[in-house]
Image (cartoon, rainbow, N blue to C red; front, side, top):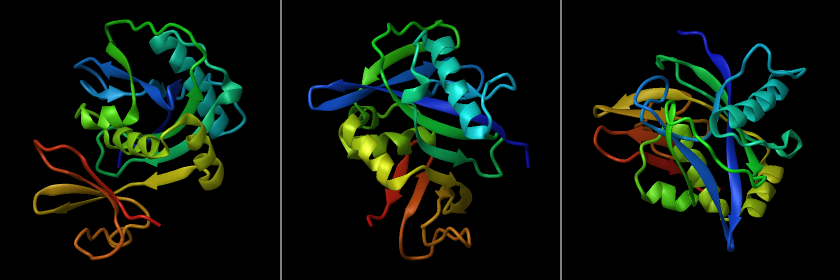
Length: 215
């Protein structure tokens, strides 16, 4: 199993009418997450300040936002949303903290090398547009779309706390199925078991299929 490195991702959100938009970036066709739409983020460096992993990840989120899109974000406004642990089969493994932060009004500037495009877009529109993205980005956008506004998202996080996704990968009928805690098949890595769903099915040539039972 490849060693996992800590990483940080930051969802920059801004109000739009009675809803909100988030900043998405398109990575170049080379390197990690090639060609995918992502939130700003990257590895936690040894020089990132903090007394624990969460604090160092928050420092990395601030640094990456500045390096990737020239945005200065307020570290005190960062809200930890989720933490993702990839499956053992992943070629490059990053245990990633996802943060949300309100946009401070700065201009987004990309280097047009590692990042080749950017857009402000509502979470629902990002999903319906079929943008190429990694599973954690898609799941996060679903959460954001369901919240509907930045303030309601803040309330959800306050009630739920940091959601943790420790991923178990399985196969079924040639598809890769990513299972998360509370799915009926999670403990046994058996996606055929009936019951509660908390999973994503990856099928070549088709959109990501995320299922989460209510309640």
